[in-house]
Image 1 (cartoon, rainbow, N blue to C red):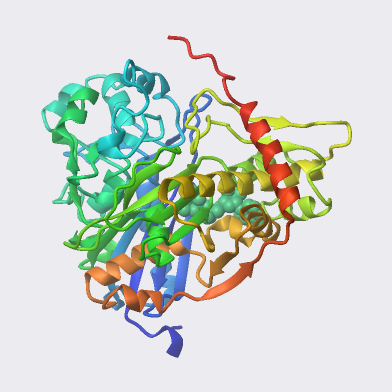
Image 2: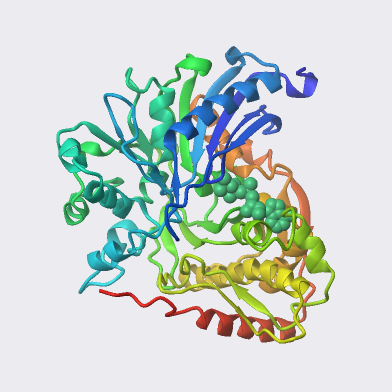
Length: 507
Ligand SMILES: Nc1ncnc2c1ncn2[C@@H]1O[C@H](COP(=O)(O)OP(=O)(O)OP(=O)(O)O)[C@@H](O)[C@H]1O
Ligand SMILES: [Mg+2]
């Protein structure tokens, strides 16, 4: 039942994530009224290939939306707008006449476009499109995945050139279906998602013709690029008549949900991977330290807000790997109990370069290592090394951010599933030598999408009203002495060196 604290109206957010889809209903104070969530299958056709069934995802999205409304005991008239947030870069092509995907979605972690990216960078290098897009050539981004599909699905290029095929990241797929699909669904994406395709020019916020030509991608398949907070259309089905009013990539949504609206404000989200984003206001800061330049958000017809991003591919998924592949723990939370049973890492360092290294290295030839092993090391030390891996990778990103922007982080705002791990949060604070703070609502991804949708329809008047909702729930302060920190950091960096060059790239 909705009591006095959760009186309507409400905003709903859909988070189409890498491992699951969620729907959360929020009230005006930004508090959670109800949540529903459903996992989808991770398809691994070959080592380092990862796919999702987009039809399964759309079914799950509809289900979690219905269930969230039922759990909140509200009817759809109480919902004033819907915001979408999504796993970024995951790439889908579908038939505009039937609504059927032409292939499974290729997930952001998938490295099948590695050779293609090296080919595109031939003679010019990894930074061929960096000035226009803010991104290095890497298998992570959507553009090369589109090209791979056009080259590898029989007859697809002809269909695409005829105008029968639509491309989208998961925001576009959800919005198109939500607004009617084959019956007038709108084909749009927002600036944040578009900024991860490697096809959008950061300066003009439009698809870059030169890059499209270089990548051999027909413009006919591309969605229209819109703001992150504006009404794209109205929903059909369970949410009939409700404005679909926001879209943001999940990490940008978390930046928004953490109310990092001022230049220099940053957050780090600890989920499957970890992504640290810093608001750089209207400045497109070129990175010389392996960070990405990306769009933070754009509200209505205001100017876009840019961000610097440090992306770490493997953090929470290393904990999952310890659970599912190694069987050393039976739940993710047990990693903390096991790691806490020893004082330190016993000399062991774990660099989880499972699909190469993302920021700040961008090395696709790296693979994971556990370094420093002796007869002394136990599974508890390894558990500690697992947590320290997340903390050291954060430290490397923070150092790079400082080099590129000159901004010193005074405190790090954190969120995501791994922030329930106290030992990890303390370790991050120790390694950064800075306080780490977590807000009351750790579901900042959904919250950010709800905030953007609420702003678009006037549910909240401005970003100041959103800031007022941010409340600190926990804080960790550094307790490690400088000598230990410096010595440990050196050992970590030595371990990182040992991951490089493991894969021989054959031409
Ligand atoms: N107590 C814990 N200690 C360490 N890691 C944890 C703990 N609890 C959860 N995790 C890890 O956090 C991750 C889940 O966090 P979260 O739900 O924020 O993921 P996510 O990245 O949002 O998922 P998606 O990719 O679907 O969006 C999992 O990888 C899990 O292993
Ligand atoms: Mg997520």
